Length: 443
Image (cartoon, rainbow, N blue to C red):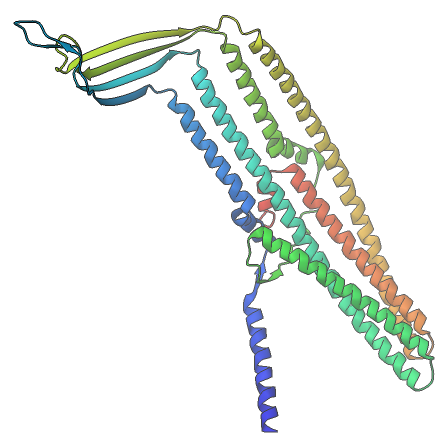
């Protein structure tokens, strides 16, 4: 007896300890925190940041071409057999020194290239701005992804809570039905039918829990949160967000802040700069070089170190290239025209999307009101059916049908609400930059 008591005591202690550990691991997070954590910890963001840093180094490399190139060389050579000849009455004459030393310093500088070197620097700087905008687009996409996951988890949680309430009601109905069956007032198939409905609702709840687990894991993975942590998502107050949406301010903000539109403009600048550089390739280029050396081996005194220097001026002119530069410029002109069309198309698609989104939000608001009225009616009908069932004036089928109506109405109310939230989030994504998704809870 004592042994069994000790076993039960330790089992209960282990359960309590497990609950305490679970509570310690549970972390309450907000949407804003999840988004910011994603932008800091996500591997794709880190990879893009490295690409931006690499582009910054390319700018430094391009600027280095504006400076002269200085080279220093030192050479020592030992010759085994030295050619010499002898003149009677004079010393032997050597044509070379067996130990040859040569130290040289060279300087080369592009005197004039029609600004092409500075154009290359500008091209790399535009490439950096393009990389930064691409990084913002990636971050914005990730912010939208985790925000939608956050909303979906909240929706599943609310749906699961509604199913728990429905399960409690069905269990109460099942208990009454079983007691009536035992007393001989109802046939067994009514008990089985009620149990079948109850098990069906339990299965729906388990499916929601499975979906929630998968989405929570995806959220933790994307946001860089500990994969073994327990998350509790903070509710969002959306009441102040859905009633202040108007078309013109949204479009104006979108045209000024959208990273994809800014990226298209930046790509046009890159093509324009490239086109200007191609046009300069047909012009002459001029460079100068200076070389100073200290060496031996210069006759007549080949053993003595002497200084020597040379200076040069180089002019390169492309006389004929088969009009390659001309055709390249025309190709770039067509690419620029294509980007201009893309800008117009993006702006038009954006306006159409925002217009449709605002109409959808207004329609979902009406649908939500209708579904809420339907839910109130269904709940009242369920109360009357349960009351009639308890008094023996309503059949179990009426109660089950009323419960099914409540379940369907609750699901529709939840779905309409979160569809409206998701549509609002989509409009915010369409009409703002990254900051619009990061600071959703503070604005």
